[in-house]
Structures are given as C-alpha cells and as structure tokens.
Length: 501
Picture 1: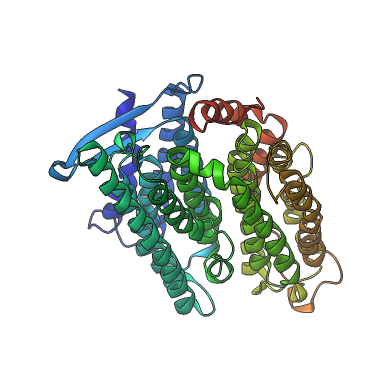
Picture 2 (picture 1 turned 60 degrees about the vertical axis):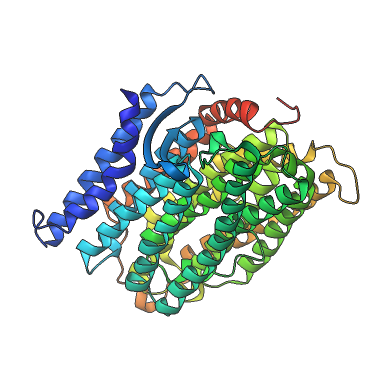
C-alpha cells in the first residue's frame, strides 16, 4: 500500500498543472491562488504521511514502483524512496509550500501560467530524487530546465532575458556531460553483462577498465558540479539569483542546487566509490576554493541577493568538504549541510524579497535604517542570520561542526594534507560573519532613507512563513539527531565510510 505514495507524490503536481490550465478552473487570481495553496498543502501533508509509514529505523528499508517503459532497450520507469530520498522529498514539498504561499506578495501577473510552471518544476525535481533508471533520471533532470527558464524570463527583473538564457546554456552544458557519462555507463554495462539495462541497481562495471571508470566519474562530476555549483562552473548562479523572482530564488537555492549534490551522492560517491576515494583529496581542494572564493565575492557585493547567492556557493563547498572526508561523521555533516542550508537560504531570500518589495531595491547602501519601521522583520531575521554564520544551537553550526570535524580526521598521503585544508577552510568562515552582519547592520541600522519612512512592517502571513523556517532552524539545531541518526545509518551502509562512527 505504501508503494502507492510514490506516483501520488511525484505526478500529482503535474496533473494539477494541467488542471490549472483547464476550463475547470476559472482564470481568476483568487481562485488560482487558493487552488494552488490548497494543493501544495495537501501535497506536503501527503509527504509527511508517507514518512510516518516509512521505516527510517531500518536503513535498508525502501519503497519502490516498477513500470515497463522501453523494455527492448532496458529502460524502465523505476521509482524508489530510500531514507535519503524520503528526506529530500519532504524537504522539497516543504520549500515549495513556502514559495507558493510567499508568491502572493511577489507575483503580480500571469498567475495561471506561473503556478502551472511551479507545479511542473515540482514534478521534475521529485522525479530526479526518486528515479532509479539513469535515463529516467536524465529525463526529469532536463524537464526542470523548461519551467525554470520561463519563470526567470517572464517574472524576473533587470536583464531577465539574458539571465534566463545564461541559466539555460550553463545547465545544458552540464547536461551534455551527464548524458555522455550515462551513455558510456549504459554501453559498458551491456558489454560486461550482456544485458541492456539502465536500472541503477543492475549496472555493474566493476571489471571495466580503470580509464573508462575515471572518465565516467569526471563527466558526471562536471555535469553535477555545474548545478551545485563547483567553481569555476558557478558563473550563472549570482546573476540568476539576482534577477529571478524571490519564490524562484528560494526554490533554486534550497532545492535545485541540491540536485547537483544528490547526483554526486548517488553516482560519484555511491556508484563510483573507489574513484571517489582516489580523488577525494582533490575534491576537498575544490571545496576549499569554493569556500574562499565565494566568501570574498560575497563581501564585495552590495546586492543582498548576490551576497546570499555567493554564500550558497560557500555552503556547497562545506558540503563537498564533508563528503570528501570519506568518514561517517564528515559525510553525515555534508548531507546535513544540504538540509541546513535549505532552511537558512529560504529564510535569507525571503527576507531579501520582502525588503525588495518594500523598498524597491536590493542595494544595501540604498536601504539602511529599516529596523525603525520594520521591527518584526528585524526580530525574526536575527536567528536566520545567526544560523548562517554557524551560531551554536542553530542548525548551521551542527552542519559545519560535523563537516569540518570529519575533514580534519581524514587520513591522507601526498602533497595535500586534509588537516591543513580543513583548518584553512575553517579560518575562512570568519568572513561569513562579515558579509552576513553587513546585511543585518546595513539594512536595519543607521539612518533611514527619507523615501522609506512611509513603509510598513511585514504582515502576519509573511511573518508566519519566516517563523516556520526559524522553527526548523532551531529544532534541527537543538535536536540534530532527528536528521543525523537517519543520515548516519544510511551513510554507513551506502557510502563505505572509513571509520569514525
């Protein structure tokens, strides 16, 4: 019975998208918004209900569905929820819930098309997380491009057409590497096993030549690295965040970046575990570059959303640092960082979006002194901003502590020392305090601008959204075991960690 949750969770958003464009729903703003909010609330409740039936205490527990697709080529519509996938599914539905409820304040035109695209995007993301066939995975991976491009191009600001095209080209560039890697993987599996199959669980290329395994590993790492992003594949992110509407920025930062991380976890770390161990120290080096470069770039920015975007790149560097440690504590910390960053970045972009609709600008130098007129926003911003700099008892601290501890405990040989790299990265984190406090001080203190003296504080609905995110940040900061216990058990049976818990 629980298997029936998978098609309901994955495909009902696509059905809702079609319903919104059907004659059954009037082309009326209030009706479309209410239908959309009602559906995403039910969808989130459905994911929570599925998680109640899901046996997280057993890391081997999995629910799956298997439908024939193109059987002659070994392509099957295989979907499955394991422990990690289930957590990402719940997170995805929650973030879309936040984004859709926030859209009322941010989106002022073409409501039918907007919510339809949002629901298509939701199905695409859930398809990536749950697909267990490499070509089905790639199909959903590419499906995500269409709604994201249109959402940026139509509802963005500034030079939105150029920004949308940049997003499309960068992501398509990464997809070429992923597709090439999957094709070689599929062909190698056929040559070695004599069976045409693209099912992740059926692929066996252990006896394949080392050079080909390394080639596939790097093709996939580059493809997923564009989405994560790994520097120097990051050129699209700050522009997209700056120009995209706030609900889309929330989805992009909290969920879409995690697709790249999920791809690395599912393929590079799991399927190519040996290759990951060989190149782990070099991945850790790129993680350090992510943290250092993004932190300095964030300090130099004046646009609030650009600061948060570069902060996200640094946080994805912490994720890479954690998983490249190859031990249980580091990998657990790296995966926990994905969930921690999702809540924090959603909060930060919500704050930035509310400031933008109140003041008409994202430039810190043109905002100042809002604490006088917006005390509720200032108060609720404090825990979110503190979490982003790793303050204890908030989820950001747990993620960073586990990731850096795991990296420090990594045993290495050769010219690069994991302890030196982790300590260098840790010392650079001081810069996160600089650019985050730059936002807090620049926005809420100093003398308020004359043009902003008539603005009003956030309303109750907007405050409720920020409170929900703050509650998640605090709960997983005080009770991290709610996630870490599940992640650690999954890590220990999936990623072949080298000791340490």
